[in-house]
Amino acid sequence: VTAKAMVLFSTTASFGMLVMSMQNLGLIGMMTVEWPLKLQSLFSICQFLLLDIDSYGFSCVAGQSEVIRYLLSALIFPLGVAWLALCYLVSRFFPEKQRWERPKVCSTMGAFLQVGFSTMSATSLAPMICYKHPNGQRSNLKYPNVFCGSDEHTAMVIAGSLMLVLGVCGFWAFAAWLAYMCPKFSASGRYDLVQSAWSMD
Image (cartoon, rainbow, N blue to C red; front, side, top):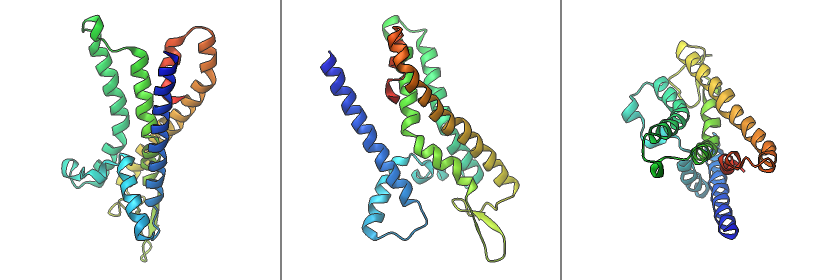
């Protein structure tokens, strides 16, 4: 049993590290730098793993309003966690064999946020990056039709700041706390808590 668990853990951890490395390459490719054509092809493939819904033709669903598109992009991660929590609560009404287990649900939430960490970071910082026009006005780099300092931009900055503090820094701090507490949980026999934090080990 231990050998199987170690193989599964090693495979999952290796795959997770591969995905995160490719996401980091995708973030590098998003920089406003003229890369060689061969690197641009590699970066474009890696950007697909960033879970950036704008790159999936999301404007066809959300409309052309860049503010709405950004706000919906920022809500993807809390809505994903809320959806998993809702499914867990609904499963409590099912027969016992079909009920979701709380440690596994928490572990899935952690894996979802861990995979999306790079995207959350890039999305939260997107409203804060502006460039200057020759006439002195400043536009957002990712959403050029949004002028920095406007009401629309202010709403985006507020949403991005909340996501940065709660989603990015909050998740990082929580993961660090779990890494510190896991040995104590294991020593005290709280294996359910250890299993809940398994995806972030």
